[in-house]
Image (tube, rainbow, N blue to C red; front, side, top):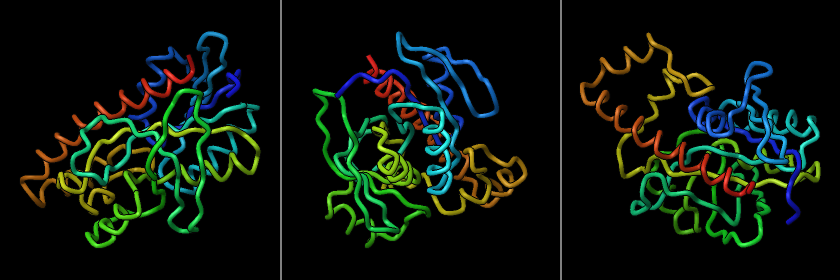
Length: 230
């Protein structure tokens, strides 16, 4: 694959974007947009917010900047219980659950891809659904990549995805109620968070563990993305 000259890095949440900004010494040019250089490569990093529609919109914005490669970077939920926190996945296929369509990342030479990343809105908790996904070869889930992939493919722009496992269903750290206090950029609404914590004394400990695991994962996927630019 030809080395890119202008790259866009997309993250759904600010906690995913912060390691990228720090490691590449990027500076903000407008809200949610950061720019800088990595050697001879011009880098633009964008905060997409969570969800498929947000991912597609951010990809369109990145493409309008004239980039020749888009990197989706961030955390993912792992479906395999023995996959360690911070494990970086390089999927061979990205699957859009709503549309039933498949997309294939373009990886730099020498990188071996495997498994399926399943993308879609919504939080999956049904054990039968999760088991069926595992049986189909799905190794992780996220909420943006397939939408970014479709937008990039339509525009003829190369893309890849760099996700790291932050949690697994078997961990018991997440439940649907977490979306009650979470903003689209991943930040928490203080009042809603306080109400959430008051409902179960064990929730504070689970969120603290999730925060620690997320920090490990966000640094891992940032390092992986940057390594592919070398």
